[in-house]
Length: 290
Image 1 (cartoon, rainbow, N blue to C red):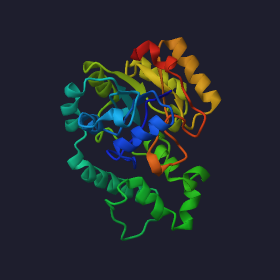
Image 2: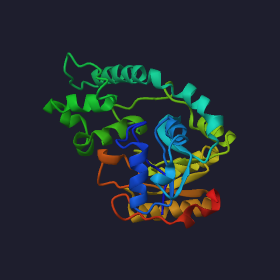
Image 3: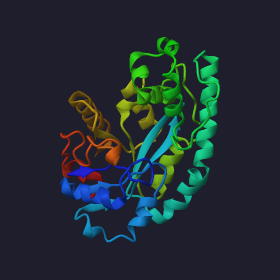
């Protein structure tokens, strides 16, 4: 069983590396990628861990990188790259010491967008580094004011994640923000991963609020920004998986599978099995990882 999309305490997961490995072993995972956001630190730390104490399978290097393509903020998964070749580039492109400053700047830009669109916020609302994520802070405050409800769709009003995804990938959304000044382009990220011997996969396509998902894939493929697609994902329907599988087969793209496990942050989304029904076999990745 493979799981090529997981997170630990080195980004927004709640488990240590050791706990992730223990749960992967318990659930029968045989090939695992730890793909924390914008960092390769878990794989550096793995060099000082006796992995076999916790996990009997294979671990491949991985990371999930924020980037921008055609004005849309997306995440790409880099796999099997040379850790020593890529780590300095990652630290320069995604400096952890500047992360909160970047989030704070993002937050106040969102506040300005809210004001321009007559969204009511608390007058004393400030960035909270404990909450960390700007849209979460804004969402929680916006919900205090009933008059804001009519400005959002039901899904956006009901879910901070839906509001976040729209604000990053739907140019027609009233809170849309261009992240081009904050993150590198998808093409630059892809080129660096390949330069370091790895492959590039688009993460969770159907989470992005796009008018035409397959057209977006076409554009990524034409731009040579991806080598493959995350076909199996925890929240994908059988129809979505089938569509992506057919697309990859017709367009000579590789396929991957990942649960996006974040530990106790979402305990129902389990490593290896997602919401209980993934169980993706090694054969899926045999043509690009072996």
